[in-house]
Image (cartoon, rainbow, N blue to C red; front, side):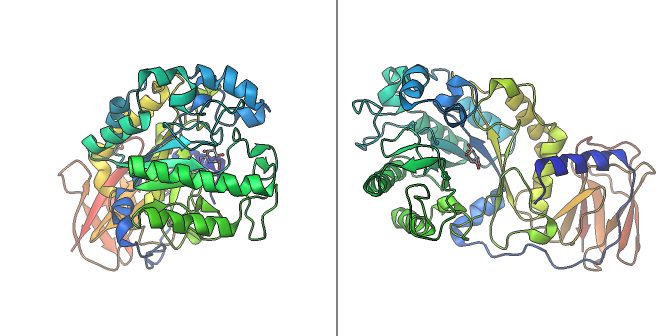
Length: 452
Ligand code: FHN
């Protein structure tokens, strides 16, 4: 797996040296796998928005603050959650930015590890530490007085804009009476009875979410036990629980798409979700997969990282690289406690919008690169007989050397967004293209090579 640092170094290295491609023999698509009918839209979509939004957004120190700072349930509930009041949450604005950026689906946290339900849950055991108030946005925070439902607002805005709507749900729940912070799953069950009851109530909450919002995607998390043994109080979630949860989801809606984190590490669920990393070319999953990425090393809003956003070139390079390996890309935003998007996330999304306006055909519905290795200047994606060369490092000598696709004849080569045909010469498996001196796009200029 490329870690985020390794990839960042790679982007910098590519930007620093003017090397042309190494010539490799073309091989079959390295990540060909079949996509079930219910996932065709998802696989073609390629690009979605992740939203981490909860009481931690108000606290502004990330979604793990309660655990990292060992904040008691009482303190977290009364001093943080009780002050969370996202009246400026603007679903239409968020969806507008997502749609403009070329995102085709949104996955939003319905309940993160903190356990605050972002909807008006009626399931009895999800109460605050006193056992008297429902621990939800509506039941526990001042926002309840608005009568609003942020998940419904986001779902409606997605529907209006033609985006699919998905939900994130954390299996671990730091504020639930059944468990306490700490342990390998980041929470420890108080008893095996408490565990059994929690799992029953958790499934009831999940059914509520499916009944109320009909999510196209259910993105589970907080499942870290990696255990295929009998449950213990520490490793209280197991492979068997994950298998059962997956079947339960399919019983609620056979078309719902569920990620592997029903219990990760056992090939469960419908797709894998490498986090903030892109599988190496030789280790790409042989089933649908999606890299989730944060723009600034934070998922939930973290005030201290508001000046630490990744460069746009990195995000565009990530998207191209993931598409070149046959994956999806879920790019996260973490709205502030008042519900507003951060300036940094808007800037990145606007940059993605500018790039996707010209180049989205090289992302949507593409197959993985037809070549085993990436050239030093970038990567490839393919759709039918058009191979897209994603050039992140523009050649200095006005010539770009690329691989030839299956010895086919070429109809034309153009820079995406421009009609001018570029001159080229073919020598065996190599195609040398005469390109403009200056890169048309400083982040990723895409050449469309249309084969006959
Ligand atoms: O613990 C969570 C984390 O807060 C965040 O939600 C990420 C997003 O994929 N998932 C878990 C860490 O792997």
